[in-house]
Amino acid sequence: MDALDRELVRLIKVRAGYMEAAARIKPDRGAVRDETRKQDVLNKVGVAADAAGLSRSIVEPVWETLVERSIAYEFDVWDQTRD
Image: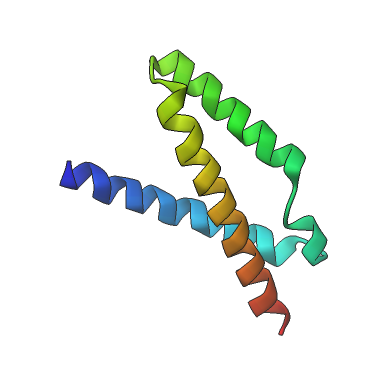
């Protein structure tokens, strides 16, 4: 379990790198929160969970939190790169 947790942290770090890149290229702060994109991500994760035989009751709240924290992080990076 510990090794799996470390791998998940590594993957979240990769995801954070994409959020950093997105923050740098978005032209204005209003572009950071994209509800259509968020819903698309959550839908795709739900489909992937179904295909893997994993309960959406595990996946959906985890990804909702992950996406919201990722958006908050992207706002932070956006602000830091515009100071």
